[in-house]
Length: 130
Image (cartoon, rainbow, N blue to C red):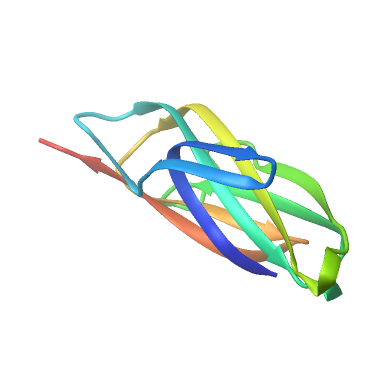
């Protein structure tokens, strides 16, 4: 399994296996904490080889600077079918978040797990601006 895209954006949409992503970012600037971020989307595109067909589980965690989960993990199942003509299979995962609350400044991280194994981390920096 390869991760082709793993990004946080203002908006993303999967439209018949075409992934549209608008406004990627990795930091939020605010004057005070706690802060509520109104809406964002995590967009992921995974590619699987023919040896990896079948069911898989994914989990996404959002953790704070201390490693504490700030939202309930997002979990789901994906089934990778056999692609035609020896191609490899790809799948898009789009997860929308509303009203994310961040208590303090620092480095937060989205963590992606496939079949219980950590695959990647995506940082999100919360900065207090004077």
